[in-house]
Image (cartoon, rainbow, N blue to C red; front, side, top):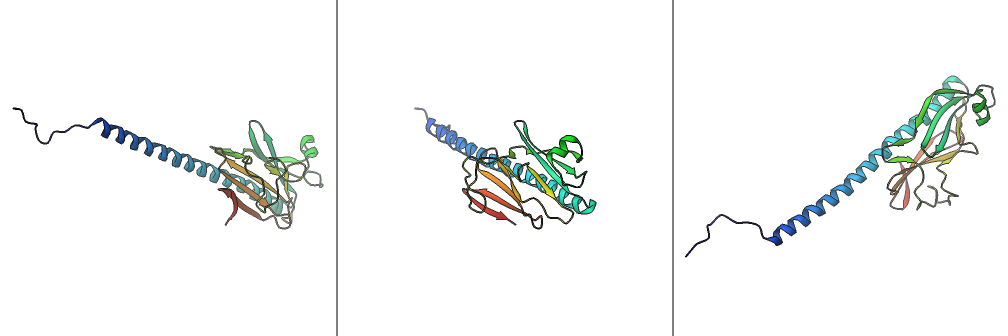
Length: 196
């Protein structure tokens, strides 16, 4: 007669399958959380870059006592922003930029950060105030996509939209014309909310 040794035990097939399933589920949850964290950090970094560019334009307009604009370009390779100063007293215009009359202030800033870039998720149909959006253009500053500041800190009113690659998060930077104030809104879970 043989006796089983006490203290030695293996795993049954059922225990192994259950353990594998639990580990797999934990990995899926962790990957989803990691994706959300990457989206959030990317949109936060891009938000900081855009706010810095806009604030620099307003500050330079007041300090240099001239019109300064952020010229936005939305190209297939990614959106960019670049500061320009008025060279002939009529404000910054696309025509003057092309001719070289309005001079560039510094280099071009690429508006893409990791998993965030200029754009609107397809499911966003209204602006932060509930008004319907006409199309998916993420740059909405006048006809020329120029956010211009005057020496008295008034500006072109408009909105710039950023989004995460997953289409689950978006940001709107609303610039008021009367005082150049920037208000930031976040679109999350189907609604807009102001970020203080």
